[in-house]
Image (cartoon, rainbow, N blue to C red):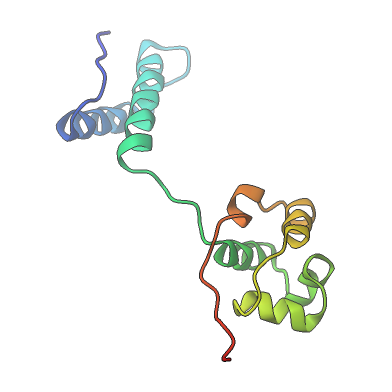
Length: 125
């Protein structure tokens, strides 16, 4: 069972092909162990060469709302009034530290996503 680091795109594609061929391996078999090791190597390569950027904070809030069946009203305890919720979701107001804490605690949105900077709409002067 010789395994080598994935260093090139060709190595990566070959590893993916082998992972696919081993996908139905049964636990506690040499094939399953090989699948486990190859998956770890593929994951390490992808982390460096195909990083997935964290989502925009507002997009993350909208995603959490959609996947959990939440309404704008459900955000009021975290963001404030109905108007404040509207301002935040329309990017007219940025998230405050207190809002970020509440969204993290109440909805479970990771703080590292919420603290990122994002584009906001500036009110006309």
